[in-house]
Image (cartoon, rainbow, N blue to C red; front, side):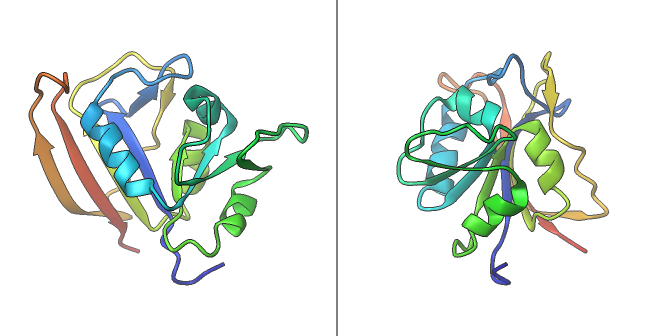
Length: 166
């Protein structure tokens, strides 16, 4: 694996660690989507099959890597692998591959990630998938920007970055 690689988890999570429900996002924050696009463009984005299917297509100007246990799963324009390790091997020449979900992939990746790029949505939601607890003994907050709700973004939110402190 590339020693200069910074494996980054990028996620939008609610106050109760909610990620989504019924394989979909619960909220719509255009500012978060714009930031996600700007941050991940030009990089590998690694995700589970359910996350890919909720998006529905490869995202432009990114290398889409899908993790699934189904050996027959194929999607034009995407790379399909059967483990997080294989996904990271595919992305070995990318200095900043992004893990973009879902909950199972986040749970696997949080112990090996170097950075967390989190949008905190300042609201609690009914959900069926959740982000793992961010252990402040392991993760050090390095920046935080708070944004008020407005006509386009219904909820207050913060962009928060963490680096692994251990």
